[in-house]
Length: 307
Image (cartoon, rainbow, N blue to C red; front, top):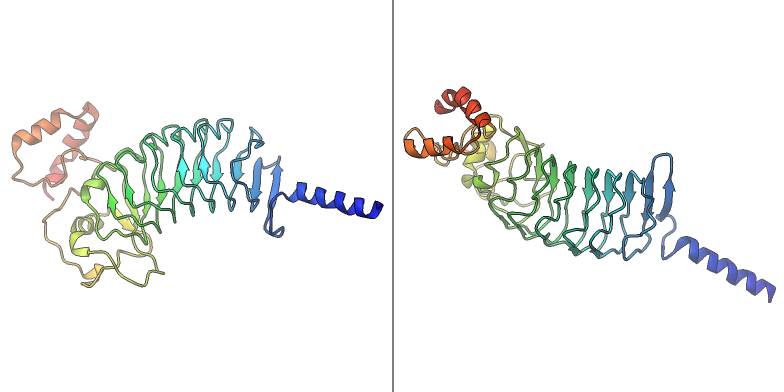
């Protein structure tokens, strides 16, 4: 009887320690006070735990079963700079879910089931530098999707069924330096989507080594070819893999659809600018700019006009 009681007691202790962990070799549940890192990995969690220390610097909640991020769920984590939610089952993110994450720099939402974000979901993440959305359920990137991410430098959206990038979706990304869009359903890119990105060169990742089929209609990407030639766009390892036509390196483009070589200088008036541009339209655009923009344009316009 005593032996049975001891065995049962031990089982209860083990259940309490390991929770719903099914593979103890991969589970991790600890808080390292010296590095201020919180781990609850492979734990079968269905919601964000509320016992995360308020001074946590990095929070690792990957490989659980979290499906919803409700409003204010991270409200007390004002010192957190890295939040890892990779490999969960998240399909809904409340627009105020990230409220309180004032210091967050890296947000990993890879390998979830997210198909959209409500407007202003990222409004409280002004410090965010890296956003990871690989292998979710996105088909369209809405125009206001990334509003508020003024310091974002890198975004990874590969392995989604994206077929449309709405105009304006990148407009508020004033610090963007790298965009990864491999293994999606996109076959072309509209120059208007990228025209307001102010800091260049911009690194684009449109094709991966592991892709066995080519999809990009490169003849529709002549604007990118011009930007590459002027050094305002660079490729990370591989240029686009063209579908059923000439290779990217051999692609010949005329000036049709050309945009200015330096978006950072003239983002409001350079798109499709030609020497025959209506003078009144040019003047109207010029007047709508701030004094700082006007000064920059006056310094550079003789260079731009010669392109």
